[in-house]
Each structure stands twice: as C-alpha cells, then as structure tokens.
Length: 277
Image (cartoon, rainbow, N blue to C red):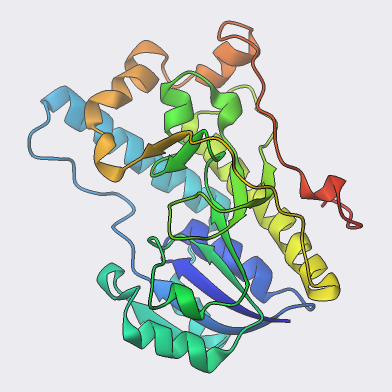
C-alpha cells in the first residue's frame, strides 16, 4: 500500500513517521514536511518575570524529555526515504502541495504534526486520510491537548486519537484511541512522550491491517467537546502545574486525590483481526 506522510518537523513527529517508513508492509511514496515553531519558543513579552521563568522551565524541560525519548531526529532524514516536499505553515494548503499529492497518487495518507489540511490539498487526498491527534477527541481537540488534561487535573485523559480528517479540526470519524498507563513520578512531558511512543507502535499495526484488508473500523464523533486554540494558552496557566502541584499531578491522581473518572476509548483492536503491539 502506497502511503503519503504529512509531518511536522519536531523530533516527536519524525519519530512516529519513521516507524511507518521502516515497516516492510508499507510503501511510503511521498512526504510533505511542514516546518514547525522552535521547540523552545520565546516567552511572550507581556508576561511577568515569574511566568516567564515558568514558561522557560516548561519548554526547556520538554526539549530535554523529548531528546531522551526520541534522540536527535530532524526532518532532513526524510529525503533518503521518499520524495519529500518541505513547506512552511503558510504553504501547507497551496497548489504546490496539491500538485505533489496528485503526482504521488497514494492509497492512504497519514498526518501528524502539521496544521489543519484544507482545500485544495484536502480534496486530492485518498479516501483513507488518517490524522494522529495528541489528545482524546472530542474532549480535547485543537492545540496543546496533552497539556490541558494536566491543567484540568485529569491526567488520565492524556492520550491519542487516530481519526479521519475533515475540514473541521479533530472532528472526523475515530479509528482508534489509546492512553499509556500512568507512571508514578512522571510529569506532563514524560506522560506526553509515553503517549507518542505507545501510539506509534499501534498506528503502524493499524496501517498494516489497512494495507491487507482495505478498511478499518470508524466511529463517528457525536459530542462537540472542547476545541482549544493556540492563543488559549498563556504562561500563567503553568502555575497550576508547577506552583500548585510541583508537576506531581500524576501522583495525586494515582493516590486517589483527583477522582476516579476514566475515559471511554475507541479501541480498533477490539474490532479487527490484528494483535495489539
């Protein structure tokens, strides 16, 4: 099965896409790589000194954890794997990308780490156009959806969703959802890395099933949930994570201090003849 990849440029994006590239059952025939913002962004100019320090600590900690999890991976590695088109965010939905998609003529597309894909590109994607969303849709849609479960003190909702893409953000029919077992001592970034690592293995297995059987189960989203936008996040939100809980929210949950409500997940492996990794 010929697979087209749409990838962000951060190490976590490259890590996941390389799992599909390395699968003997899949033929990665093209890659669109979108340049993302710096892994350690500059704090906003209008925040307090305290919030600035929290912001810098948060993103420097993320870079350290992700370097340990994924190594020094960059999108430059794609060029040796398949024809690759490098674009900026404002080029993602351009005629240039649409032409590349048409020429590749893939059987399926996998998207992780780019902006929202719209026409003219969307209309040229194959029927199976699956996005790996870091968040449990529909409860957490949009941006920073592995941060917000910690802010709202429900780390058990830190997970991932594989779904069909449509014009609306993270609203397409769901194929599969997963979340890792929470580990005592893990903070927000360690938990996020565990989501990515676990879902990477499961995504490969699901695409290999699609290559053999031509279909995957789909569950329509019937709730609206919450769509978080990038400008919803402000440095002062980090005070909940670090000032109030010292990044020990997982431990508080495991100790029974934050309730016991568990998410209901869509599990594709319950419906198909494929062993879960």
